[in-house]
Image 1 (cartoon, rainbow, N blue to C red):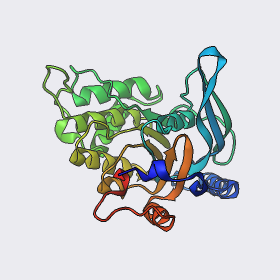
Image 2 (image 1 turned 135 degrees about the horizontal axis):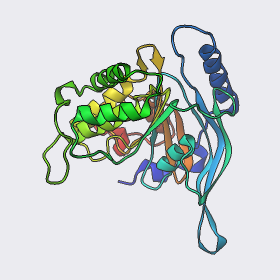
Image 3 (image 1 turned 90 degrees about the horizontal axis):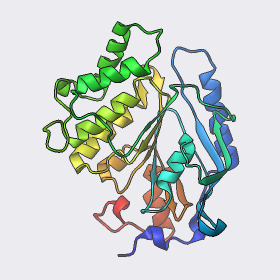
Length: 297
């Protein structure tokens, strides 16, 4: 069966309007500056975002074409689409991680304004786990806490931050187990992914980027990892904005997402509530077949 992503014509392309994006950003900014006890987080929005890559013979290729959208505090935004649709490029553009051979245009706003993120405000979890195989889970997180957290924190405070982060990701039963790797017995793939997330959230970032966090994991491990990630959205008075690129999630994982940005060939096919995506395509002549996962069709 032909994927509906490749069949959807351009007339079905929808994007959040400039007014909607600005309204969401201004609301989030006002909440953040209210001076209340709860951290209201960061609203990240992008408008008419283009990314082109320079090739040989001075030729350039458009990877992203005029994307518009937003990610709200306390919510999970999933970036989905077939391979080569621009998922990782969009994530890298929003996180400021594009390579030197790329050219970016358009606006990326933080709470409605062009401004730089302060150190520790955002974190990025890469697709591959880069962990020392000889360390235990506790050692990996503790050492990272000593290196990442500011000198104004005491050793005991850093240790407490590491311990609470380990509990937050449900790794307390594996704290003394070696991470392991090729030829070295250790923790599971899902646990490794959670260790990587642990290390990145030690600074309590308000904005969390994840590049295919379920890659290489089975359905059970994928759900457990994503459930933990979704729980980070609102935790201990912190509202985090979570943006994750993901490929063909299970139905259970898909239900954890608040909003969906669906890409095809670098263009927005759908942006809106994840729960409304199936109805949108059904109304436009592309219903999901019975008893099938919409993410797979």
